[in-house]
Amino acid sequence: MDTRAAIAALAALAQDSRLATFRLLVQAGPAGMAASKIAEALALPASSLSFHLKELSHAGLIVARQEGRFIIYAAQFETMNALLGFLTENCCGGNPCMPACGFPAPSI
Image: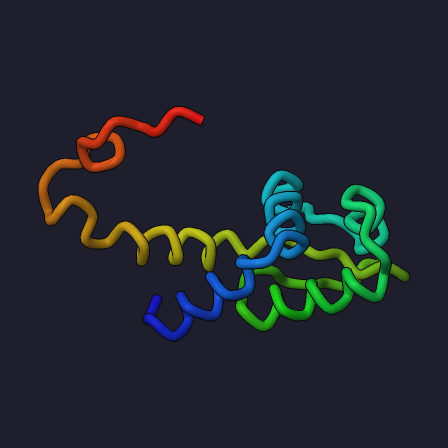
């Protein structure tokens, strides 16, 4: 993944509804979900969800397919994995990684 694609993906995920939508689709797996089920699960109006799905799609994070009368949306796991790889490519300066690069995990 190049920097431009990583920025587009991160920008698409940097919004509450889009992040929730993407996480829901990751949980749904390759089977995906119909837009109506996504809207119901996240309590989003159809018009808002449509906008968010478009943004995620333009960033390459989700893909849509037609099944009968329904459009099914699914996470693009290849893009997700490429983004994770991009973010951790130079982790810990090439040294074996420890959790959080040796820093204690913050308590939440």
